Length: 400
Image 1 (cartoon, rainbow, N blue to C red):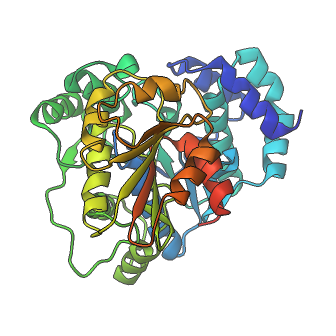
Image 2 (spheres, rainbow, N blue to C red):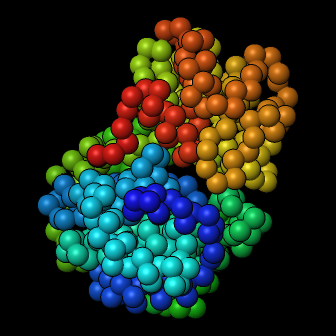
């Protein structure tokens, strides 16, 4: 079993929230998170985009930049990047040769292991800054062992309610776990009940909270399409104001946003007919995607390919989607806890031009056969669609 196969094999250990195992593994690795300059980003939607923007701005400004995100689209290496380039397999080999015994002794999960590897890699490469995306929640997420220069909070909404809680207040409390004493938190504009929780937790531990209300400067261009990305960009730009010891010139800021890439977010993977890939999987991100899709002026029919993880509250997603898409193909992508295509199909009330194709590649190819030049197709619902999208369209999600 090679190193990458080993990593994927321990995914069967599932999600185990809590920081004890992470701290033990970090100690075994020499505590690479200690003293590592970093920015931690949490939230429900947009955190990956904000991380990509921050990383590209720092990279464009000439700083050696680490980027840790999750999940991956095709290869696990995508999660750990140095100046946009995924960690090489030989570096994964070295890490596991050194620390596999500790991983097994601690029974560390896949995410705990990959988080420790990211810190180890960034420390060994002497990065100037590491941009860290929180995996799930914040309070009990492995990334929260970091010692950040600042924390960033994107918009918080209902998602992963089976783990984080069924109300916005409960979820906000979990997300607020990234706050650190004396470390500024730059937050997107939030719902009132979310804001109350963030302010309360910030006051409790003396972490100043700064809510961003500025409009996105018209002279800046974001390479990731969609108006929501302007909000994410404004959050990233605002965060830079609270980070000292880095010289980010306006030209680096402008060029960093103008050249940023973030795969699987309003990503145009084919033109004429247009095909867009987006990993939106909760009501807020679905609505954001549909706002963008509707702005494209597609005059023909719209085809939807959808796969999603089994979860509560799927009906609002379905109701929103079938208002736009009249031809729907339900499929199921491999991964943790996928919703069977047949079960997903039972949620759709509009059975006209409706099909169930469990094999994801076949579903995508069937959708393509139905398209004419004026039509459009969206592939949405899960990061686990990445391998099929990559294979059908012969594209890579590796280098930025």
